[in-house]
Image (cartoon, rainbow, N blue to C red; front, side, top):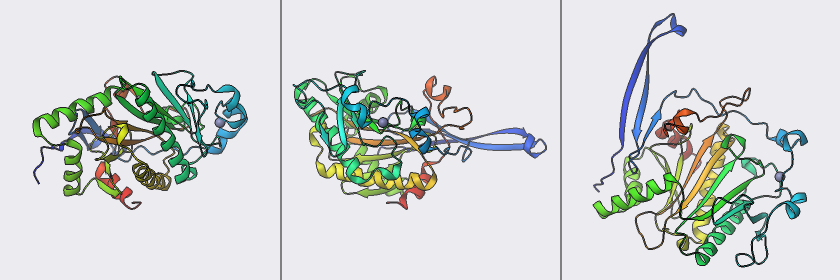
Length: 344
Ligand SMILES: [Zn+2]
């Protein structure tokens, strides 16, 4: 089946006199790829040179590092806010260990924080399917409720910083859920590009991406129920991003318990892969587009994060990402796909 999707790779190289080889000329290769949806570029270089740093998770529970945690059970009842009764009369709704609170420092009209666990420090192996399912289910229920209360807020998303390298301010596992008019530049770039693709081709980019990646076979990781898991052609994080697409879910109203089961099951596979290669931290997001459209399906992205070292805790993002808005990745998505596939 023909497709309008282009996977453009510009391979190049740079030559220098190498002090490691008695100043013999050495040539190193790098790539620039163009995101087939947004047209934005991403660099691939420094292959294999950057390793995820091991985190001493036990140390995060020590009083000196732990400090005051408002999400821990002994503080939660006094230190965290409650929802107004029009949103959740019970104040802090819960499901299993998952407890939802409004953000004391809101980023939007509806800005919820999901405290995912009772425990303060939870390794990836601790995110069993019930914990994940309860958190996603309750968070999505919140977004559906926000949509009913405020139908003029068209976009919904979940975001998640896990462990300090990701920028997460608290080690205690938590996600953020937003109903918003302003979901961020990446969301809006993807949404507009998806609409433009639909307008010019009369096809859905994401459906075409699944078909084309399945045909090419280099970045298609696997299918879990109705969800499709891919290694992203351009990645935001150092180790490569994994994408999950739900082609039959467009807005928050469309997602069901079965979809959440697929997300949880696939994510559990990703976590087992991360554990196997020593990835301790990530950013993740789940995007829901507006109602009444068929061009921008729900999708999930997970991006590993690390410190460059644990001597001075240099972050893995620098001027490239913060000023040039250019991601750098040290892992080719085709290699990532080959590795993750073993866990699906
Ligand atoms: Zn805590």
